[in-house]
Length: 278
Image (cartoon, rainbow, N blue to C red; front, side, top):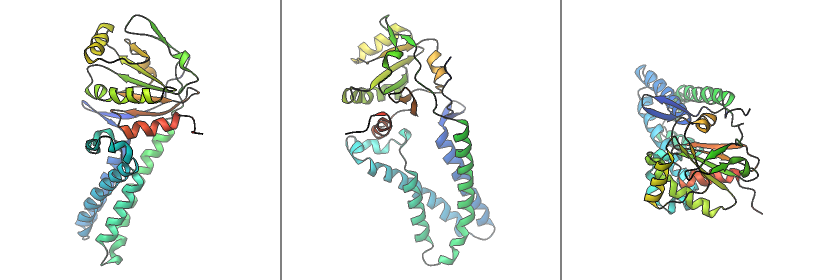
């Protein structure tokens, strides 16, 4: 019996699903801003405006830094720079941008810089505690299950036959808008990387629905299967669609992404499962 992927990657807030990383960042920033506001009410009024502007500078810097470092990917579709829901933020560039703004803000009174230490310390401790706890409880130690899944045309897809190759396993459904949006991107990279098995597993829909969707949109998905009973969804602990799991050639899950993939995000994940270039 194979263990399920020990991954907790999102939290549900009412009807919304928030990736855990974003929730942790939001909580750390909330601790940072709350500490600054408390100190501002106690006499350090400059801290409130500094903190909010530092957060804005940090978020902008994190996005710009990520886009610049993945310039080739974003150059293919410049508007995708605005697709924040796909993720794509560099923590290093964000911290550098926040620090640069802080030095500029206090450039004429460097002695007041000591006041920024408590908010930074609180935000850092919250982030360290949350990410540290998550790292202990969640592990990408799962493996690609060697199951046989039905296909829409009545045949069987044996996942065991894919072992020995890197695998990109995408869990999707035809009713899911972000799933439909990312399918062309995944197909493009499936053609670009024939040595990687791109597996598309429809979640919970009847075969006729899947066949009708593919015919209507003129799509041919390689390694297509259906998970009518949610067995694979439970095995991979999928909490929302789309979810994409990246397995290396040894069948080990080394990366996963909740939500719509960006070109840059897909390229980053593929680098982790592709053999080194010679």
